[in-house]
Length: 279
Image (cartoon, rainbow, N blue to C red; front, side, top):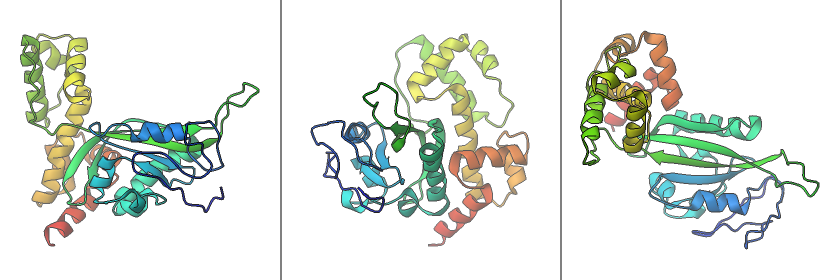
């Protein structure tokens, strides 16, 4: 397969030139393994999943991803790159992640980040992107050539979504979560919150991970960023004032965290929100 050839896919199945559709290990340059595509396509409720070839072009995407992009057919996605389907700075951010995996082999793990969907409603995801490498050759030495990637972004519950847990432990955890979401502007220490709730750090970590699929620190970071997102679009406060009001030590720390999570600077996000409101 040449580098310019476009992979193709049938709904719900991985099938494109150079691969054995029965799941064999045969590969062609620049393609993602069939098993990789299967992995990316499994499941809908866990978020959007995709596979890409060595050039960063989509070879597979599940229905959730298509719905997020307001696409009606896999044919509208296959062969395109992420910066061709996601808007502006977000597409650039995701493309940079792809390059990190495909060219440097640095995998993205548990990246808490904001996705802006076509209706501009922000939604939070935990993203994982893993390199897919050549099959082990007959000589037994592991192949190092990266031929594609698999990505999974799992949607997180919106703040305030309850998860019934009929146990006293949940009430204690709920008090901690309430503090994290209500008092995010304060210099909160997770260990102190756990102690006040009568929980060990291990208990608190385990319960919050079970409920939110986030660590307590990630949950606090999300609360601060959510508040900042609202203020950036809904107020005329300066970025420095918003940083202080949302619990960040200074303007620089806020900007770094914001860009790392959203792919945008606070000012870029504010401008994007302003343009959306005028439409």
